[in-house]
Length: 256
Image (cartoon, rainbow, N blue to C red; front, top):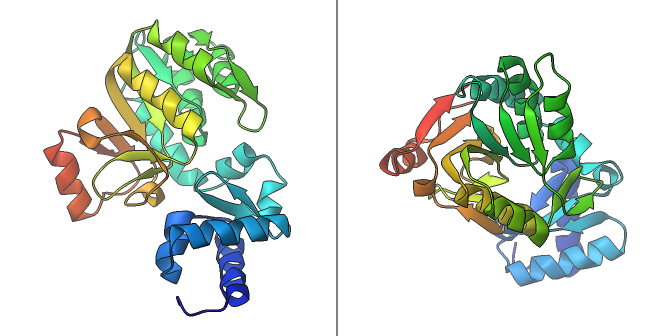
């Protein structure tokens, strides 16, 4: 498809994003067999025309962009995320201290964790803090401070990272944008990736919650390598190739 005319190529890109609600630069470049730079220029043109919305690492459908991104993501693979959240909550003991980053799956996880007992939780998500504070046995919740994003209902930035560095927890529970074929955890948002990295550096054990659609995909920003992960909770067994890499890195794969 490298010989397509610009207008034809952009129409194809718009169609892909419209059908899938979102697409990454990596996915579009591979699909159309053209450079990442060309994809980024095309996305900029389409964004200016109001056809789609250009975001970190790719684009989302314009109709989706008009709604809260968090609300939209919570509706995607909801059954799988709920199953992962329930199974994930079973892996922790009341009294554990846990960093929890912002995300749709970790939001569901917080709901389930709140039913399991009292914990000490440090989070950058206002949604997660609310979930864990409004339970019969509310956990001790530390809400990190920083620049607030209304879209994600979370705080990000260097102030958040600095606060995390001053704390040490038993666990960190993360949601990610993608996990590569090499087992690297990745995200589409740089600030979210920085927060996740900081939490990993201040926790004893790392648990990642990711539905199977995230596996063997790529995002722009790396969060950590497979060897830094202790557990992956997902809804389907990874492919044999990824499973072998995760096993070699010592990752315990838990199927919800």
